[in-house]
Image 1 (cartoon, one colour):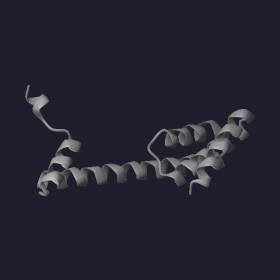
Image 2 (cartoon, helix red, strand yellow):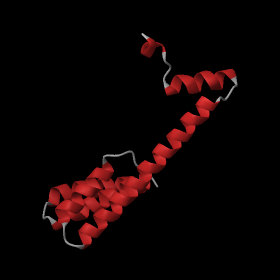
Image 3 (cartoon, rainbow, N blue to C red):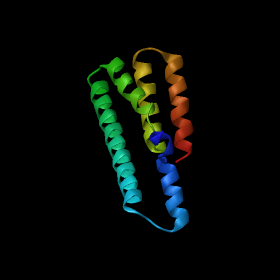
Image 4 (tube, helix red, strand yellow):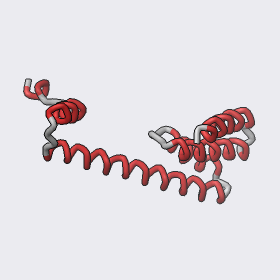
Length: 114
């Protein structure tokens, strides 16, 4: 029963913003959200770098897995464009033309949003 009475993060933020009071709990939520997003961004950047190294080494299947993994996370538009382009390159090297063209189309559409 106690679990049901606890407020979600969104509810805490809204309640405190509506009351005009910013508590330590709200600050802690903000800090945790920031740190989580920073860690996710660092992970995406690392995955992209690893994918590029694998691609340069001719390990296209492994590189593809890294790039597809990046695309599965919450990305900024420029990250999604780069990852989609790299996915297209991997498919091209693997002689999977249709999949490569599809990924290239995604990359181009995302690039126009920049």
